[in-house]
Image (cartoon, rainbow, N blue to C red; front, side, top):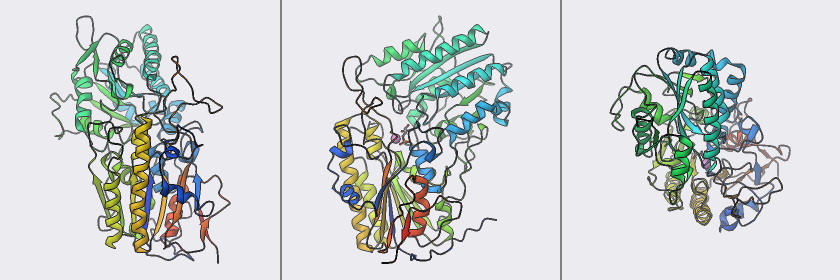
Length: 555
Ligand code: 3PG
Ligand code: CO
């Protein structure tokens, strides 16, 4: 069995209340007009920075530091919160799928064999995000999957695309669709009946998360399964170009469309006997569609027709629900997370965010596991997000509400760890609206103040950090850092995350005077935070955790 008892920290006391704040999408970058954190009034975060180097530093939040394939991979919330919560670096979905495709093992596993049963008589449907962002999916992986599936006997393939513009530049969906169409044409030359069957923008079709808005998933179901959508086209590139030409249209929010044949019939509804693979590796935005595809009992929307399919996910998306039950690649085995340890060591935890980020400080934090480890030791509170809006319209989001819940939890005396995610920098940053993102950053800073004030009152400790960059850089840049211009001379807005490091600050009246950041971990990353927090709770971290960022010197 696992020894859950953590050894005492030789110098640090137990029982302090720790306010653990994750600013979503809050990186550190050069100060210029496209750095919304710099432009915004952020007095609280600015004052924390003055604690450098002993009580403020930067940590790595992208690439190999969070288990992604290369240093060109930007950070994201899944891998960021996984690292923060688990204290170790796990090879993540993107990397595991790369390896399984490279070795060909993906085609030998249980999941692929299961869907393959349908190939002789039925259609293989691939549903997922068409992107090279590497956050939820990658186009090169989709192309390898298509090629492999056809070599493994798939005779009829339908791809249901979701356009991105959130992890990649807006408008890039056209180029991706052309690449995909080109590969599908090659398959057709080889006698495989392969086509795009439907599409829609990721934020409006299919890829909702944490049950914020089931109508998003329903729109996908209607197009992908039922073959019904408000727009019908003969060809996907034409569909995207036409729908993008509408006023205010963008890749993230394209309306759903289906591809129809010459007689106007949809080319790829999902029917009894078909195989379906959702090819995203990232979990959060696949859980809802996986439930719709897999569960017999389902009441979130009227599915109208529920085909008997063989369904597999690229990965298993929820380790607790074992959802979906079939999958192509084993997910990272993120075990023994800090949250689970703390429940065995008397640390009572409160976690809170609003719906769109709720699973980040719970599900991702706990290694892609929904639910509590021990409901007597933990309380998770979700503040309902505004749904059906883009967050540039409400850039303050629920930051104050989240902070007030955290404040109350801190003051209640019922918890030793109070953990929140403040979504503003990220969710508004993804809209590409610079003015709104500045408002968002200010709102997040004000929320931090509410929590720090409560920590001050109870003599506690704060740890303020972030999961990856976003709001600190809103423009696409060339190699020398200059903003890139498009054909009409406008700057290219960066809606995605960045490769930037993120800050971590510690402090509060409960912090023992001799605590400071070590100098010998210059390349420390998010995975070093869990051991740091365990120390501040008065424990030594498990020996296989990434080392703590702090040391205690005798004053
Ligand atoms: C999203 O899912 O919203 C983006 O692709 C990534 O954002 P997140 O990693 O901050 O959630
Ligand atoms: Co984000």
